[in-house]
Image (cartoon, rainbow, N blue to C red; front, side, top):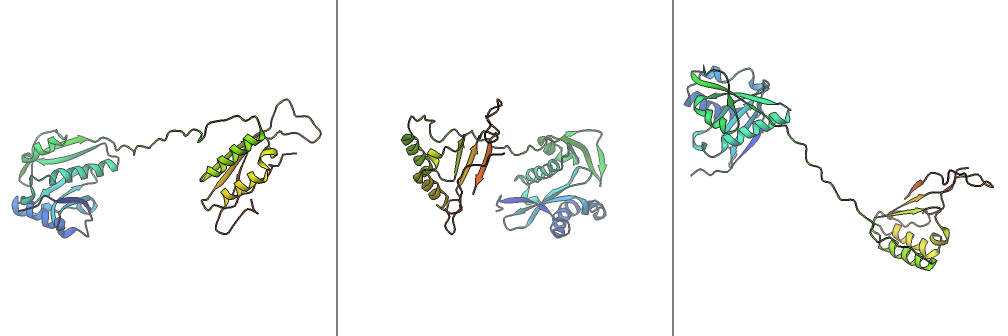
Length: 270
């Protein structure tokens, strides 16, 4: 009993020639009496071929896609017909045509196989004709373009902790320590002038240091909006100068094998 396990794969004309020959000559030359000189043509080396193989790696079916955008030489060994092999090969060839961006493919169907191709969306055109002593019908199908893989969109993350207002330095210090100690990979700090009363405290600096040397690749990003003016002059009516981002990967707070960060006031432009 033949198992229905099979696969369809691209075939190399040179490397897989003997398997292509086995199937095509068995079906077309021996079974359908097509002259062997008509079975192989100058297009074969330039075509994209597929092979169907059983679970023992034996060739059981084949087909090709020509540079003229035509599907042909569809053949399945007799004991494997009616098991979906032809459907799978036809789909594989159409997928290859779509990958080339082709809007349409054609084929010359043996009249006995016209209904098979019609099930896959092919429609006849023109008059029937004889080829290799067998009546054929030209058919074609429009191909839907391949859609690019759908990009996953991610919801914008909100703050990891609720926004809070503090009425004392002690409360702000406690909240800052809790936030730094709970961070895993990255900290973003937005500050008008880095508030040294808060961030220069030894306990806060130590917390940042421990975050940096924890071995998790931690990074602190500081966005400061300093006021830009010359020494001894009042700030202009334009208000604060542009924000400056500091991605600081604090020497002096480093241990072997861990990342280092530096903390300090951003320099003001003269």
